[in-house]
Image 1 (cartoon, protein in one colour):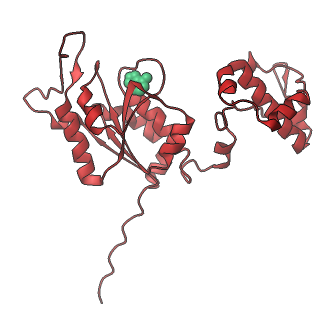
Image 2 (cartoon, helix red, strand yellow):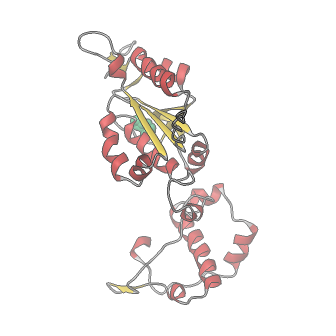
Image 3 (cartoon, rainbow, N blue to C red):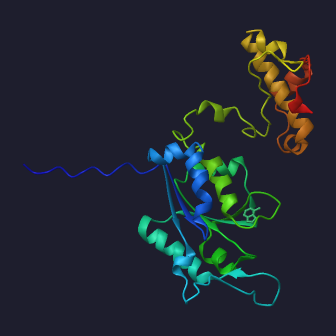
Length: 264
Ligand code: ADE
């Protein structure tokens, strides 16, 4: 009898390549979050490659002082390039993201775009920066998670991985909730409550206890608009009211009995 070849396991739905000097930063995040389950189940794949393993010399130095002077140390291009190339030689080309505060601002639209790419590489800088030739030669895009400076790209990569993974069908395990959430349509999410109906003097809005699904849906859309206007007016400026929303607003907002602490 001829033996059957063992079928290879299906490719993960999201394949993450980390290029980092500090792979251990990702350990607890990847294990403890929702993603841990998906990594064990083979739905998300994660590999990391450390540029230090490609550094030369006795001291395995990966950084040097900047040309032109200035403070801090800059990551040298050779070990980072070698790490990227080694990872791709083994597992194939990925869409390469370089994390930097000077990149394009990450948002939900970019998360959705990345969720469709299948294989993502996160190139994490450290020290004062990364030699610009890595961006020039390797980055498909340079991405920032916000207008502040972190000590390195690792936490930014973790943020992006979590936001992207939960948009990959089958990863989150609860796909309906990604549809109605904050930023999906330039609106913040409406507030939510659960039992008990009164907590420390604050009651759940009566409409939510009414069982009238149409009224609840309308109320939630108004709350979402009200919250967006109060907290993120620039989102409303960027995504003006639709005709439907204008009609909803003109109908007059439903009053809440008590303001919950989330709005204060
Ligand atoms: N590295 C340092 N700060 C960062 C930021 N805000 N976003 C992405 N990568 C970074």
